[in-house]
Each structure stands twice: as C-alpha cells, then as structure tokens.
Image (cartoon, rainbow, N blue to C red; front, side):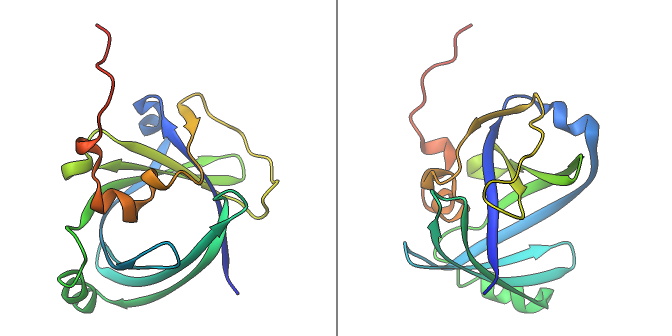
Length: 163
C-alpha cells in the first residue's frame, strides 16, 4: 500500500524563491472530502491526475495515497464536479540536500498563504530546515487543501499585523 510521509510548515519569507529550480501552476478540486478519504482532481500543466488519500496517522505525518495520471480534458471535466471552487496555486521546487521542498503560494481566496512540504522516506528521517521555514503545521487539518477549499484563508480571523 503506498504511504505518503511528509511534514508541513508555514513559510516565514519568500527567500525560497531565490533557490527555486522550477515552478508549476496547479489547479485542483475535490470530488469527496471527509475525514475518512479525499478524492482530488488536479491539473498540472498539460496533465491531469486523480488522487485518493486516506486517514492521517502518525500525528498527520503519513497516510495512504494513490494517484493515477489521467488526460487533462478528463481532469478539467471532473473539476466541474468539485464540491467547492477549485484551489489554484504556484508550486516552487527547492532542493535542500537530499530532499525536495515543495512551497505552495496560494492564489484566489487563499492568497497570502504559503505552505511548504517535505516528503520523507520514514517518519523519523532527519532533514535540513532552511531559515524561511516557519512553524510546523503537520497534521493541522485547517492547512489541508481539502479544508482550504471549504474554508479559504481569506475567511480566517487573524490578529491584526503590528506596524
């Protein structure tokens, strides 16, 4: 059974952009999102994907994930069936030693939110944490894309910024 192991972090600054070796535009929606499973449709450039994710365990660090490539046309048709509006984001890829850090800059109703993910081979695997990585949010459901599609970042009540 394929298991995804990752840690998620907020991002302190856009310092990652100078180390980025590639970036991609992603549009995704959810056909099903509940606490037991998520069925996601995603378009990345000219390719579509359908992904099924299971329950999180290890405090949100790992969970079942199955993904299959589908045509872009099929993915765009399936996006029309999404539970809520699609999420759009730019994903920046940054190599840090033996890991690729994916930093998502959210657009639309989630504009202003940046989340970084580091995929690991084991739950306890060590990794280098760059200065622009902030607070860890692994396992915090409000930062899951499926949750952000229902309760976007711009609807959160946040403390006013100090000037």
